[in-house]
Length: 610
Image (tube, rainbow, N blue to C red; front, top):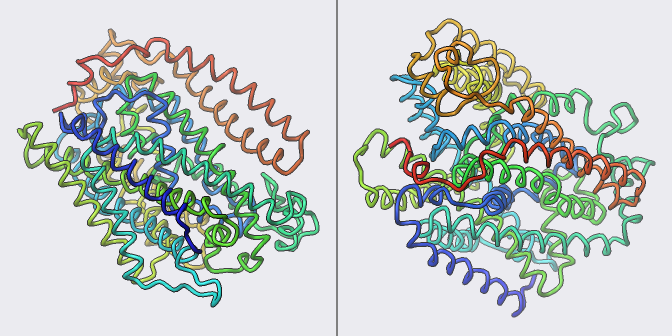
C-alpha cells in the first residue's frame, strides 16, 4: 500500500499533536503521585469513560473481531459480548465502592480489606504479576497485531503478493511508536494519557466508520454483501451468518449451544480478564479513581460499557464481513484477522490511508500508554512505596514513577520480541491469562459483600486456577470445556480454604466497612458493631440498574445490526426496548448518584492511604 504526501501529512500532524499534549500536561503530572497516576482525582466522567474505551481499542481488537466473525459469524462476538453483564455490575454496584475506597491501584485494596503478612504478600505478588507479567503479555500481543497490520498494508507488495519488510524495518516503526508513547506518558502521567485517549478514540472511530462504508460499497451494497458471505459460510439462508443469536440446531452450526451457554452464563463472573475483571480492576479502577467523585465514576464506567459494546464494534464487524466477501479463503485461514488490514490495503483511497494508519497508531499507542501508566502505578505504589521507601517524598515518588513507566515499556518490548521470534500466538497468550483467572473471578466480587472472605481466599483462587488449568489441560478440550473444568474445582477450593482459615481481624473488617459502606446482608456481624454506619441504601436498585443497562447494550447491539442489514421492523423493536431500558436506567442513575455528585474534597484527595 503506497502512502502519498497527504497521508504522510496526516500522520505527521497526529504525532505533533500527541507530543504537544504530553508537554502541556508535564507540569501538572509532576506535582504529586496522585496527580501522576489518578489525575489528582479530578477527571470528569466523559474524559475518564472515553479513555477506558480508547484503551480497549487496541491494534489487535479489529483483527480479533475479524477472526471471530470469520469463524462463527456475527454470533462469534459473544466471546466478548458476554462480559457486558459483568461490566454493568461494575458500573452500578462496584464503581461507587471503588471510589469510596480511595485507592490508586486495584491491588492497594488488598491491605484495606485484609491484614497481616498474607495480605502484604498478596499485594506485592499481585502487583509484580500484573506489572511484569500481565502487562508485558498485553504489550506483546498488541505489538504483534500492529506488525501484522503493517505487513498487510504498507509492507505488502501487491504485485508479488508477499510481505516485503525485514524485522529491522518492523522494529524501527514499533520502536518509534514506543518512543513516542514513552515520552508523552512518562512526562504527562494520567492527564496526558486520558486527553490523548479522547483524541485517539475520535480519530479511530472516524477512520473505521469511513472504511466500513467504503467496504460495503466495494462489494456491491448490503444485499450483495449478505449473499457473498452466506456463500462463504455454505448456507442457503443469507442471514444465517448475520444472526445475533445463531441457529444451534441447523445444518451449519458454527457456534455450539454448550459454548454459547458457557459464554453468557459463566464467563462474565467466573473469569478474570484484563478490562473485564469481575467486580472491576486494573486500568478500569484507575480511571474510576481518577474521577471527581462517585457519581462521575459511575457515569464514566456506564459510558464506557455502552460505547465499548454498542458503538465501537460495528464498523469492525462490517469490515470483517466485507473481508469474508472479498477473500472467501479467510474462513479457513490460520490467521483470518489479517482480512481487516487487507481491506484497507485494497480499497482505501489517498487520505483515508493516512487516517487509517493514524487509527491503528492511535489504537496501539492508547493501549501502550495505559499499560505503562497502570504498570508503573503498581510498581511504585504497591512495591516501591509500600515495601522499599514508605517515607519517600512526592518528588522522589514522581521521579520513580517516570522511571517505572519506562521500565514497564522496556519489559513489554522484550516480551513482544520473544512472542514474535518464537511465533507465540495471541490465543496462547490469552490461554495463559485465562489460566490465572478461571474460577477466581467470583472471589473478587464477593470480597465486597461477604465479611468471611479473607486474604487466603484470594490466594487460593489465584493459584488454584493455575493448578487446575495444568491438571485438566487437554488439546482435545474446547476453550469453554476447559473453563468449566477449571472454574468448578477452583471455586470449591477457595471456598473450602475460606471456611477452614481464620477470618480477618474485626478491627480490619470494621475499618473497611466504615470506609466503603457495602450493601447486602453479608456484613451483618460487622454491621452490628458499627450501628452508626449507614449501609449502602440503593443495593437492590443498583442490581436492577445493572440488569436493565445490560438490556440497553444487548438491545442496541441487536437493533443496530438489524437496521444495517435492512431488517427495519426488528431493528425498531430493539430500539424501542433499548429506549425503555434507558429511561428506567436514567432515573436509577439519578437516584443512586443524587448524594454523591459534589465536587471532590481536599480530604478525599489527600487521604490516599499513605
